[in-house]
Image (cartoon, rainbow, N blue to C red):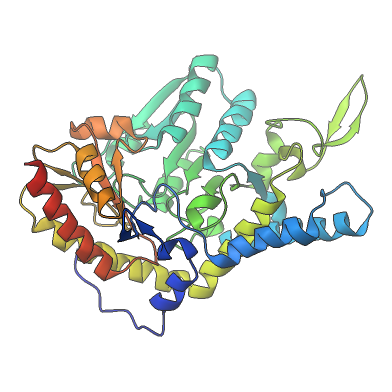
Amino acid sequence: MTALKAIDKTTINIEKIRADFPILSRKVNGKPLIYFDNGATAQKPQQVIDRIDHYYSYENANIHRGVHTLSRDITIGYENARAAIQKHLNAANPCEIIFTKGTTDAINLVASSFSKRFISKGDEIIVSVMEHHSNILPWQQVCEEKEAVLKVIPINDAGELVLDEYNKLLNEKTKIIAIAHVSNTLGTINPIKEIISAAHARNIPVLVDGAQAVPHLKVDVQELDCDFYCFSGHKVFGPTGIGVLYGKEKWLNQIPPYQVGGGTIKTVSFEKTEYADIPLKFEAGTPDIAGTLGLATAIDYINEIGLDAITTYEHELLVYATEKLQKLQGVKILGTAKEKAGVLSFIVEGIHPFDIGTILDQMGIAVRTGHHCTQPLVAYYRVPGTVRVSFAFYNTFEEINVFIKGLEKAIIMLK
């Protein structure tokens, strides 16, 4: 990786941005918080916090049910949030946006509903070595229930998918491919468009796990031509417990509801129930209304900064931190793909990642340690786990300097 030209301060105002995030002003163990665990969850700007507070303080009512003013108004607000997500992903229609509890819930929805209609004994489902457990376990469960077969795309030592091997896996038995847009452990940005194109040449649909992509990259689902795409609100600076599933209208109309109940129906009798059209057919019960409003506010927030500026700035942070880490003796970075998002996973020779994370925490530095819900990927590298540093646009070069000094101290203490 080569360093980019320093970004224009008028493009991304780091001081103003940091002031929007209250938690960044707190201290941990007497030290200013340095938050490098954005891959697990991102912090929330005051604008998101205020939007949720305003809903509960002045707008609280249920949606799609009432004729009174509060219900009508918040139904409009909820559907406006759906339209905002549609625009952000460039989906063709708001009905292609389903609100879920998060990426995990969205993948489970597709795995369950798609398999009921389209998976039979002997069929094959393709995932990759680098998938998060949330994009492995639902498909494993489908394979057990349907007596189908799970196939796995291998990677090379740089942490890149071996596309020649992927193409060999495609055949008439392949019914769906489920693939991460960005690896949460390695930061690898996968060639999603190429993967989808190869699948569609055989009429195979593709689900993309975008949990690590949407906070950092521009995502255009029509340009990608993916069949399903999902992400979580809490990783995109929004609330926990809310997420999004995009699905092409043709697929959402074909697959049955995942959960059923209030809000999913047109008519109910003891003899027969007629389900609602999409998207309501997939949104059973009272949804996370406050979370939906908070998520739309978070999307507005990152669009105000600009995803091009965010991507460029975070790449500068990645390049800077990579160069610093490479100079430390005994440190090995796992995942050196040519295309990477702002994630660095590394090991230190002779030291367990947990011990490093514990000492860094005493210095106020939050990193992730362990297998990062990617045990098959960690097993490929034959390590017990890694230390993971994951960046967001509110992080700074000075924080990286403090982290490097803290890591050097930790290594000396633990050797």
